[in-house]
Structure formats: structure tokens, C-alpha cells
Image 1 (cartoon, rainbow, N blue to C red):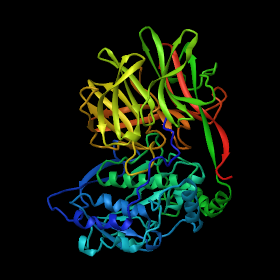
Image 2: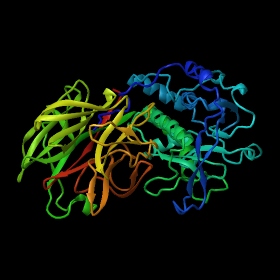
Image 3: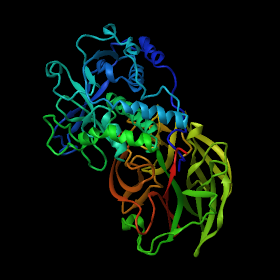
Image 4: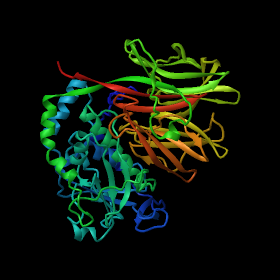
Length: 564
């Protein structure tokens, strides 16, 4: 479990003007290069009712529509990233948009930055038009291959211009403009971002995530960072047009595609200024008290039950000076050993601890077996080639590392760096069809740790690991992040996932893997389990089982004051 308040990784602080100016050289075109784009065709056979994905070579030249009044740092970061491909030419044109944030939103952001020591400028900071001077008419043709409209204007507002070339527009829960993002955050809802073509059909869809739902600036910038990922993936032909649970992206209210009943987002945004005002007077947060639950399995397990067992769970006791989370169990040497993240409040970081279970339950208390300078969590433990191995999460190191036990359950030695230069969460391995697969959520360019799934494959678990060509294979805060080892059940692969739509680790999902190969990945979320009478609290986060025992974790809620 990442002990993330949402601001433990520094935000990028380089100036906007420097980032924009760096595109002057990157925006030079190479005529022999082709960019593959996703284009929606309605009524396809691959996804009945949702359409198929067809790829066509277009968009060497992209016009980006922006509103001078609503420019922010994320627009400059987006253009900087898109311009890194030398076969693209970018041009900015100014149009009148709509749905800007209320004026007191900036006051809220400044106050939170001051209280928490957050660096600014950031992705949410207002930008000046002069920062976009590099994107003049000299870097793009008059007739672009694609118009990327980020002004917040609704479809049909410029019908004459739109008829000449394809137009992609961005909306959040069916509402154009960034107010929809902040409204979703105040409502405790994970927003669905949709990039739509001229006819309103989604080109790319993602359910966005945020690590912290209590610091609005951090969460808002998490959302903005992931929007950049979504747009870049769409332009590279790697984005999905639907969510894995079958949820359709809401249509824009007021558009000719709106089927009615979608005014909720608009009404929520209309009260946004009042919600911000209340937040300014009463800043508070939820302080979770994490704990591990265990039970002896008699009869069906949680995957078969799809509900909490009637007998409930027994808490793994702690002394109040630490908490336990991220349970991983392994049957080895004739007994069950449980590995957990142990977080000592005095040291302020996590270590990996272990304890054995016998027929009656735990024997003693967890004892540390692996400690590094960085915070450790999610101890993915597995047995292969006659040894026991562990891949702990340590996203602060920028690597995914493999350790080997020399004196199980301790004696861990560093064996290899599996993936370098990556900020990854909850790496989980799977042996499937003669190949090793690695699942991990990746935080690239900011944003949430929990909403962007990447895959790698390798002939051996030691590597070399090759990234999936369609990474990120999924952007969905409701089902991207792992919640434990993948389980084979009745010929199917069931992947426990974290449902973070209402905060980190809020609920546990069970997703069936429908496709896993070098060309694509698909999963379908079949079950969502939250806290309840059998597991009181506010979160349900992980699932692991071995040797007739089953383990989960979660938290209870404690209210605290940020000020005073």
C-alpha cells in the first residue's frame, strides 16, 4: 500500500515558457513518417453497440483550439509532449470557449499549496498566451489533418469550420471544460474523460484517478496529468473507446447526441463555487487506520462467494504504534507465511514484515524481513525455479526490482532490476501461455498512481521485459491497479483490482481477463466488494490466499483537522 497523501512526489516546477519554447525544433515535420490515429466507426462487430476501432494514417498536422481566458500549465505540458514526435506539426488557434472554473478555485489552490508546501507553478496554474508563441502559423499547414478542440466549446459551436476537417473534443462526465473535473472531485466521483470525434462517438475514454481526495489541488492536477496521457494515447492509436465494466461515456448535455437525463454534471458544476467556499472555511481530511483481516477458509473462498463470508474476518492485531497492510500469503515449507507492509508511525516509512500461520491462526507478530532507505509496500511474493522471490513496490526508486530469499522468510538479496526509469505501483506477475506477464500502474508525468495500467512480457521472470506496444492498455481508476495475485479459476483468469473511484483502496473489484497477448488486453469487472457488516470500515483494498487461509485489508476512518 502506497502511503500517499497525493503530494509525496514533487510536482514539476520548470517554467511554462521554457517548456513551450523547446518545441521549435521538435515540431519540424518528416514527410515519410506516419502517425496512426484511432477513428470510431459505429456499429462494428468487435464491440456490438459501441463500434470498432479502425486505424488510419492521418494527423501529421494538428490544430489545437484553446481559449485565451482558460489557459493552464497542462496545455503547455500536452503540447510539449505531443511535439516530441518529429512527424507532427502543431498550431494553436484562439477561440471562445466556456465552462471555466469559478474565480474562487484559484484561491483554494493557493491556500492548499501554502498549507501543504506544494510547489507551484503546476498543471493547474493559469498560463499566459505568450507562452504559446512557438505554435504559430509557420509550424502548421492551413488545412490540418485534425483539430484538437480543448477550448471547452460544445460540439456544433463552430459547425462551418468543423465540416472541413475531423475535430476531437474533450469532455468530463459529458460536460466540456475543466469545471466538470472539479465538480466530480467535490462529489467524490471518479470522472470519465471522453475524447470525441465530430459525430460525438468516443475516440478515447478513461476513468481518471487521484491519490488524494482531500487536497483538491493535488487531485485536480492528478486528473490533468492523466488527460495528457489519454490524448497522447489516442493520437498513438493505443486508447480504448469504452470502460472495462461496460460503462458508456456520458454524452454532452445540450448536444444533438444527448439522450436526456444527463444534466446532473451541469447542476453539480453550478454549485461548484459554493462548495469551494465551504472548503475554504473548513479544510479537513480522512485519516485512515489500516488493518489486515484473515480467516480460515471452509467452503468457497471470496472469489467463488462474490461477497463477504458469513463468519466475517479476524483482525491481525497491532500495538497502535504501527499499522499492517498489503497482505501477501505463500504456502512454503509446510506452512503459510504472510508478508505485509508494516508502517511504523515514528519512522514514517514502510518495511516488509512476515509471520507464520498454523491451523489456529498467526504465530506471534510480524517481524521485519526487508527494509530499504525508501518506503516499501505491496510485497508480491512467488515461488519459481526452486526459490522464493519478491517484487516489493518502491516507486520512489524509479525501478521495479526483484529480490530472492536466502533464509526464508528473511535473507532477501537484490537479484535484478526488472524495469528501470519508471514510477510504478503494485507490480504483479502472471505466468500465462508459456510467457511471463507483468502488470503495474505507472505514474508518468504526474497524475494518479492508480489509474493507468501498463503491461510487460518476458520469456523468464528475470527478464528481459518488453513493454506492451499498446501501453497504457487501460486508463481506469476503477480497475487499473492490482489488488493481489491473479487467480486461475475454472479455466479463467480472475484479477483482483482496486476500485479507487471514491479514493485510494476504497473497494475491491474482481475482473475477468478476456484477452492477454502481444496485440491487446481486455478485462471485464464482474464484482465489486466494499466494506460492510462483515468488514466494518471505509475501505477494502487487497485479497490474497494460500494454504487454506484468506487475507484482506482496509481501514476505518478518523476525522482530523488540517488547521488548528
